[in-house]
Image 1 (cartoon, protein in one colour):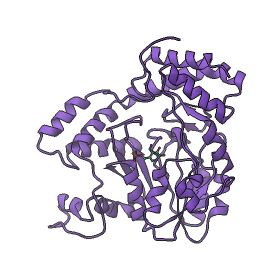
Image 2 (cartoon, protein in one colour):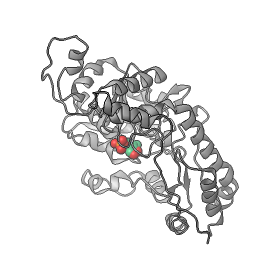
Image 3 (tube, protein in one colour):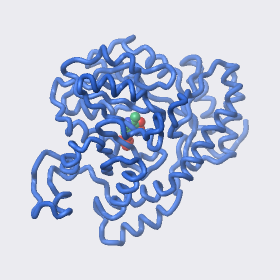
Length: 380
Ligand SMILES: Cc1ncc(COP(=O)(O)O)c(C=O)c1O
């Protein structure tokens, strides 16, 4: 067995002027939230994506929580969420007392299956939350049409999908609001961070208030009111400008970062395609009308046992591959909401078979060669 340095699943890295900006944020007299770097990051996201309002948050989880406040989710309300997602997508609404209604995923993109939506809608449905899994767009035309018939807001969990597109339009710009993640594992990061994109202007003013502890501080700083005071419920969802400085340094390098990630993704496809055909391993599927965000590379192995053996085998070679997500309806919390085996059979199947290979902004060509070589030598 080859002995080489371990290859982590993810490794955070400096891509541009992050160090310089962080130092500047620490010494320019404005380290708290909404300082100069936060404003630059807002302006960059708004201009690049064409969204009316971008607000940095302390995490994607918190951006999702803000959405639940903004929709005034009440106990007993229902929110439709894909079964195959991170817990934050659902927790944000359950925290307000909502009952999650899990929708199964499409076997091809692993995104919410829009053909199963209509039957789940009831008079209590208060939101539909598509997650653009792996930064590949959900079928937004169909989702918006179904939601539009019943006047139900669509909220995008775009944690994976910054700069991905569906039919030529950026992910995160379709729903009333969208949540972004800048967690360490994402394409653009500041360790822990996120953003709320507000596309429907009816939510903008209250979003600023909720993010600022329930005060009208943002209006005060714009000179729109002469004092700032407590006007609504809220919390503290704005990140320090030090984090915004790091993030801005990364966002500035978006072309470099995305083209590196594209290369990594394409190298995996080229290196593994024949092997995948031979052993009936499914590689990611990207519909032609979408432009993916190059967030992750996954394999769908034939069964759970093979998936587990591949992860262990790679680990023995110092390569860290991971799986996710467990079906939410079968989690401890999901069972309390009445989840039953078989409710979301595609998620149950995919969850057993999926493995993610190392994929990050600092992955080198030689590291990737080692990963591919190891996978090709795996004995089924
Ligand atoms: C689909 C999805 N939504 C939300 C989150 C939460 O993001 P954060 O860690 O920024 O709160 C994640 C985290 O990985 C995620 O994958």
